[in-house]
Image (tube, rainbow, N blue to C red; front, side):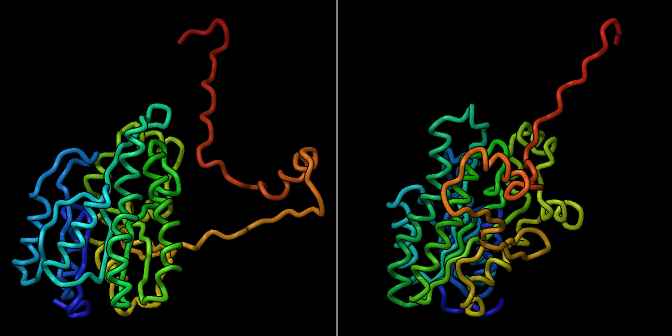
Length: 317
């Protein structure tokens, strides 16, 4: 065990399984006391069980660390408040928040219900707000804090995940706004793009996987994972925990990839091309100039499939 986080207290939402479990255990091995939060539900957020959180908390204690279980939901501000109170009651303070809790309700948008949309945003995006809203006053008073929000590369766009992608990209905007608000108080806020073989990735419907594969929707990072390394979710843990240490005090407002072998830094959005006119554009002018300027060479992320070839009349199959 190390001592980089000796005396610190961490809350990990979604800590009872997948990527969150590794983060809990690595935090504890570096000396932090950990509130292991997990409702113990299914991948789609239904049901509840104390088993997952208890299993991780007990494993930490068996290794000589300090941990307590918590089963409240991040989807409500009251649940988040109870979670923070559990940290205060058990360990006296809260220094670190890792918001890894998540659910999936994958469906193509033309089949998605309002409840499937709302449920995903409640856990991922609203949950991030609920947690930060409850931990921030304590971190501000002590003028110290580390917040890591678990976003996803899926926020860049995945077929069948309009709800999930919206929530995850929303977390990035939240992270960048919070970093500016909380920096004066010694609090860092970063988003990570984690990855690995977990219940959530295994739960992606085969139809969505097939559509993405047919359209070539993948990232270079995904290709590297598949070819060069096993998708062990615990590979994320040391990279996430580093962001919670004193050594990372000057890293804030960033999006960092933690999946697989590499650790990557994503650049913030910036203007890459500009067209300018002194006055208002006309549609005729834009028709002429756009193809050779702003949109020249821009790839279509999901090009239409070519039409099936028709057999010449009179031929037999």
